[in-house]
Length: 247
Image (cartoon, rainbow, N blue to C red; front, side):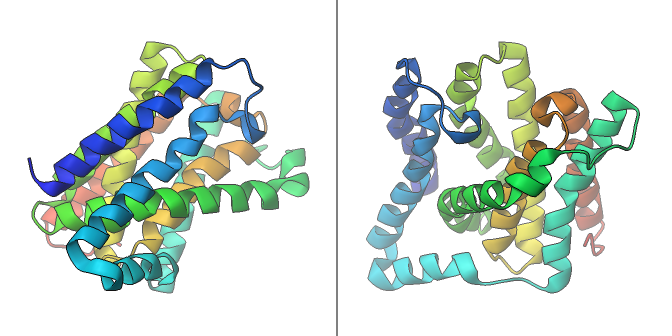
């Protein structure tokens, strides 16, 4: 087992105690997040530990610096708009209308929601992108890297999904969608000359957009999101394989 595989397995293992927090009879956190939400510190802290062991304090400083290095404006735009487009299409497929902006939360809470999810994305992507994706992409292709990390990322979310009273079928759909997310994020990361910021932006939009849609997560069906996400992932894979500019 190489270091990255060990890292991914330890993320799952060390997150298990946090999952038991969901059994406590305590009100969910802001935005109905389960108590196990605080497990986002696990991939970050483990990545910091592994980097310190491998590269010392200099490596840790460079790792932290990666959270505020921005890619080209074009890549920022692409990282921002993919998920709004996908969720908007999923909204239209379910609701058969274009009333996407009739939401009180857009005015009242969107800033707070965005900042919360941005901070969460920074913490997580220090692990998933700045450490795991960086290491595996150096040794494997983009698609398989995204698939592997997406699988771990999805399984890492399984118990929180169940804590939100999702069925096993719904959770499976979400895990498959998560794998698609990571494949897209892998291509964005590669296109940006391996900058963590693309992952932070994309991750933030995954969580932010459904919260401000009219009706929230009830405004769309995740099976539509699954199909659309994988269409984007496969399109990026096809164009990259053809040696074309996919962005």
